Length: 490
Image (cartoon, rainbow, N blue to C red; front, side, top):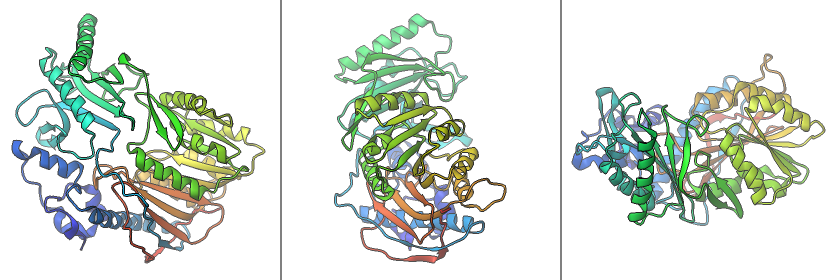
């Protein structure tokens, strides 16, 4: 029974488990013990990394079962509207044991009252907002966070405690200090972004705080690669909506990935777990079967990872990105890697695709990579993909398979609907790349790679064992309870 694999404290905090895993229903309605000062770190571990104290082999079995439950639910939801075929599961095991600790290259810590009553505690939130009982817990014992990040956080919190400016719990409470966002690369360079609410403080006062903060880090032997200061009056801000100023160090981080170099801006997207990303990119390359006749259309290209990594394998690449910081980094990354057969287009995908199609008018072999994050593509984008006959393959990478928009994307690609123009696809092969977190909750941080081909065939599910969340290393050859295909094919 699956519930026996969970540690005794791992109980009912996960809506995803409640929905997708009936085998843990016996545990679902139990309640975590009250959160108090002497158990706050253990409770935080159970929320953020609930499998951290579970042997890795058991983590793999738990993850596989929960993922299969999600896939079962998904396929039953789409087979009503599409044709169906059987498929098999082929787990894949890496030759190298994955990195299990300190792998996150991006962390965000917010201010709130701590369990000890300290009003300037930075960490992750625990408690129930509906009851007005939300506390910040420091990430002291979280094994997925780098020690260097914890050190920077502690030094920063010490500075805030001495500052005369108050913390900002809500946008309307008059507080100043809000968040600390940390990014780093494999080399060990750290970028820190301090986020504050300027309220009505004088500019001179804010500038004084900036200078004192820089001095504080230096006096405590914390030598940051970059230190940014952002004044944000909204829930979230970008560099376009609020001032983001560099107050110390270099402007950008740089990361090496599979022999290529990538510039990363403060608010650009880059995968959280670089080692797992290497596995993902290598598997994409294998199943895409690129050749020199292929044009790669990289939708939601970010900083250009896929286009740049595969540029030497294809005829040319065209990327589309709507976030300005990512787009600017992508252009720089072309130059950094001496790439001449790729170009990037800035704007919303659904508006830029038509002009891209004009460029590809005489092309007849297009492979599409979609990496739309958690929320999926706009329906107009799916419609445009169906309308372009030169597309032979679509590789859809999703970080949230159960998101309604993602499932709607798959359904719209599959449906033989007279209201939809263009040919429908069939799902030929599904590759599962699980990784990026030691979490069974809070976002389901695994990626599912969907390979869409022009001709249908038996659907195969490949579970790739990569850092932290994965399928068992033992060989499996199973047909899932008459689960029929969702074959994406024209």
